[in-house]
Amino acid sequence: MSLNALMQQKNISKYRLSKNSGIPYTTLTDILNGKARLEKCSAETVYKLARELNISMEELLAPCFMKRPQFDLFKSNVCHKVKELGDVPFIIELLETDDIQTYYERQWYPEAFYLLAMLDYLSRINQIPLCDEYSSLRRQKLSEPIYPSSIVAASLVADNDDVKREAFRSAIPEFLRFNIIESEVRNVV
Image (cartoon, rainbow, N blue to C red; front, top):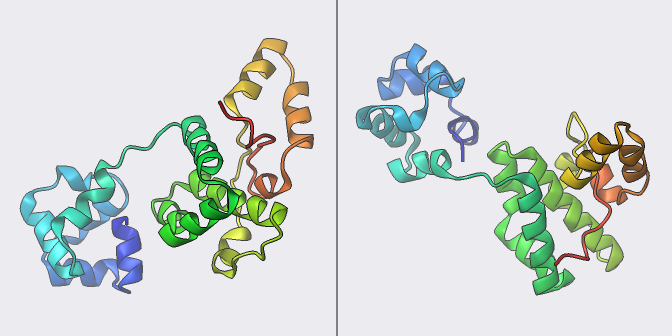
């Protein structure tokens, strides 16, 4: 969980965290705004923040060392997992792990929305009621559409947007709601 998310979860302001931890306000502001990287801070700074937030230094630093895969690879992995587990077991595992919320808190919005779209799509085709837990996320979407790289490449080769328009028209509604253009989640090799 990011430092911003931890502060929000623990209902602590930037000023209060700075004052209680002994970390200068400007330093904390730089960390929160991405001007300074938490993993590059001194052990003392990380220790003070972790102590004040009542978590371990490892927990505080964990988000800094998570590698984010390319989105097409992420989508492929999700589709393979659905194929491997089956629809209902995938839904159960997804709800138990709460990966949707985890990705959302990391601000990995395409991944969070892709998983939520997959959850909603699989729920619809299996006639399972939607999980209410993600209602607030369902009212959001990405600011720009995300097309599969194959569609982007085909559009570039054709030197027009006809391929993109067709992909948009044939997109699965649950994915399209989040501005993710996805028409095939079953035929993965």
